[in-house]
Amino acid sequence: QTVSQETWDGLEVGNTLGDTNPVPGKKYWVVMNGGQILSTGTYGSVQISGDGTNVILGHGESGNSSSKVRFYRYNNGSWSENGDFSAYGHYVSMSNDGAVAFTISYQYQLSELNIFTRDDNGTWTKGADIQYTPIKIFPVAKRIIKDSYNNYYIATSSTNSVSVYPINTSNRNININNSSKPYNAAGSSYYSFTGNIQSIASTSDGKYLVVA
Image 1 (cartoon, helix red, strand yellow):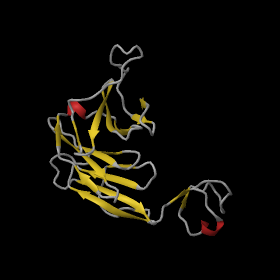
Image 2: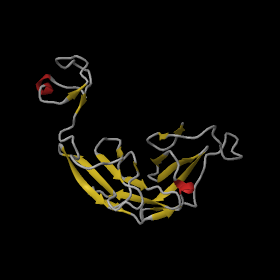
Image 3: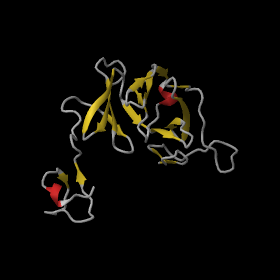
């Protein structure tokens, strides 16, 4: 953000590139008020909403009794916890609008997925444990996307293909046997990518996916 002279001395400003005073119009990385969310604990996966006000932290594999998933919200100048769940947080993902999230645990034979939704008051609710076999839905790349009709999906990759699973936000569930895949330009068959897919990105309206 841009920084005024009046607030320069009182802010934790990172990488000023030698500036001893703020340069008009120049943007700096600034620690948000109350920027530290946690002072203890180890969390291996984290995501933040598009506007930077909602965060999900995840920790733990299947069988780890200390596994935790926590949600935090930035409001009125400080961070506060607005969700604490016993769930496996090996991998976490949050939609761009910060309204839907999911967590995945990974074991070779059988693993678990949970979907969370946030209501208008900021309260998160956890869906039922969804059991699945890793080959079905545990690829390297995973992402929640939202289309222009307010529908949410989990987009995943498996080896050289992409699958998209609709999320039922009313009961926080998905049908892992019901997915769609991108067709090739002719529309006659599923598109097969060259090599393994390591990452998925999408536009904010969910209209376009980019894989790499």
